[in-house]
Image (cartoon, rainbow, N blue to C red; front, top):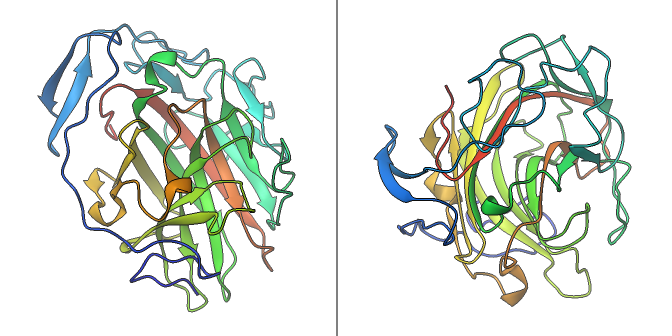
Amino acid sequence: MGDVATGLLPDGSGSAAMPDVNGTQTMPDGSGFMGMQDDGSGMSMFSDSQANVGADVAAAGACSSQFCETFEEYPSGAAPDPATWALDGSPVVIDSIQPHRGTKSMHVPPHNGALCTDGAPTCPAARFIRLTNKFPTSLHKQFYGRVFFYIEQQATGAFYHWGVMEAGGGTTYSGGLAVRMGGHIEAGGAEYLRFHMDTHMHQIMPFETGLSDTQAVIKPKTWYCLEWYYDAPGNEARFWLDGTERTALHWKGPMGGAQFTFPAEFKSVAFGWRVYQTSTKPFEVFVDDIALDAQKIGCN
């Protein structure tokens, strides 16, 4: 079991949770005019740059962010477009079984998780689709993101650590520091959000750390809206669940050692599901309505 009070991982590595640090977010020069607007949960940035909409957005005006993926244009049974998404590990499929809105979502079929070889470019146990070439360059240093996820079924009765999204310092599964959001399932059944960083450098200990929010409870068979803000030069990460900021997960580094300094920029963003232990019952998940932008996106 992880040490919730200190934010330590189950193997004892990690760093102590830190109090929320208020800061002002800024975007890189040249990424468009920046100002502030009130989004209902505080002040956020806005930009005059035009949206660079993902290829799958069907209706004109459906996306006002710089990148969107709704999975609506795919035929049922298709894989995500390889021109946009690289596959980190085992296949996922687009279907109409459990859409968030619209008619389709990305389905992560039942799987039991497993360990992966650190340093390998892919992880067979991962169910991540990774955005690299079409990750807007204006968002590589600082960006907001949003994804909806739904856990159809999961294992219980033991400790499990899962992830639903990550931004990477490289363009492959273990190609640099990974800044992830996911959760912990405790043996007693409690499940909550967990911010997780993995250096993929096991020769330098500790190689992973993070923060936990035991009040951000996650339940199966429920759609959740997860939002985040990543600031690479500022070593900062912030998170919102269903529109409410989870201040216990506010990372303002460097903390826990120099190895956990954010990269100069993020080069990829990945979505899907990853369970870091082998489970006794398959996990099955749906992911939908991905968006990336220079301003806070919201859940509507």
